[in-house]
Length: 613
Image 1: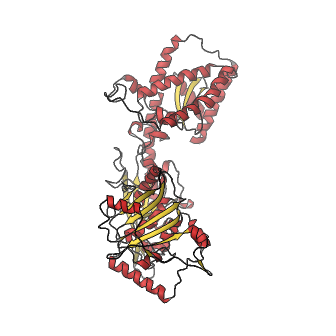
Image 2: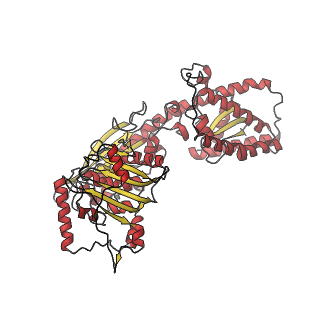
Image 3: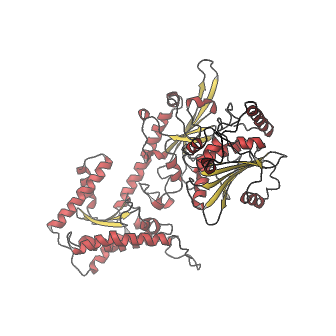
């Protein structure tokens, strides 16, 4: 992308301002209050995409860096957000004009990002009630201008039948911006650039500092991955790392998170020519990447068939989920993620996140993409999909990547099934301890047999529906697996349900662990979990589970366990674990505990195996 020089950019501003004077422009804000409030609802996908409109201006103004700085009135919630750049800046009149809808200087420019001059005011009022622009060029003083939604609504800008914007004035940026630049030892040398300050924030994605910073760092890293090396950015003091959602670029965020690597497919360069003149109008550059079936799992869970929820997943999964589809970029800047037209194929949100496609088109091809003024949505013409299919090999490549994933997933599934059939250490311990039980096993009454059969049939139907086969087939498989395995542990994803449940399923006792409960996420599979800890927790739950299942279905004892598990134990544990997250715990500094899972050669660790899929 070509950047304007300070001379060219300022000269364009002067020509624009002269044009306004010649047409006796009255500094109207279009149709006033209704228009501005309507612009608030333009529909930016996130605070990051709104902020990107401002950063586009910074990059095109040849900024060498961009800083997003939070201002506070106290507490941990940002009261102001400033976007600071050291580009060539704006002259006083242009500072005011930059906040007028349609007052852009790049209407005919197809080399950069902007076209219509809507970005700065639209994006800003979509996030806050007041936006102020401060800017200066080489050798001039700071000047500011602002838009205030409330002042417009209170008719403070109304003059007759017009809404007139206040004139720019000589004014330096606010104290928190100057303090930031002084701390960076950059204030004295800051001879040109711009600062946009959002105040009275009411529509930002996250109110808390940490969440907002994390979201901006992640999303801006994706949107500007191809620009960050030349124009570095920070958010609240944290560097924005470039992140390639295809995970193909060495040095980018999460590329080498573990030993798994994305696998590139043959890229394509689709040249688009004018059918009348035969001249090249532009190019679409297409990249393909396939991910190994274990790509989104932490190392200790690589041998499991299903990704699941909670702490089993690594940071790549969030990026993949947010970009599940065909990524469209304009001049190297990410714009949108789309599903292809249904007639060309559908996308499965689960299995199709194991491949990624990126289409980067030249801005000279805008007419084929119907790009919105907010630069966050595209609507490709039918021709685009035809070009991608015929010349970009799009759907053939997707089909090949899907086939490769299925092969890998099948191998892992087979291995997981084998591991599941192995006896877990906790089950060995429970079975060995049965000889010490003081009460006899329950009698197999008709009522208990009926319950066990109904549970088996219900589970068979559920699995059959997912697999697309008859329930009788699944039921036979479950019965075959029960041979020699009276106890089994399964996992399920049940938000809001108890942390465990236990049933008699066709004569086999099944202990279900709820991966959506904090018990599983923070304790059972938490960061400090070890095979021995998991086995110990399983033994504890088996003691409760067997007591519950052994009780007659309609007995008070059974009702007690069901009621306590759902209404008392589960919410109590969830509340306590949530509180525990906020409490600092200092570990013993004497050394590593012998049971922390490091270099532990105990056979029980091997017996633990992979959890059931």
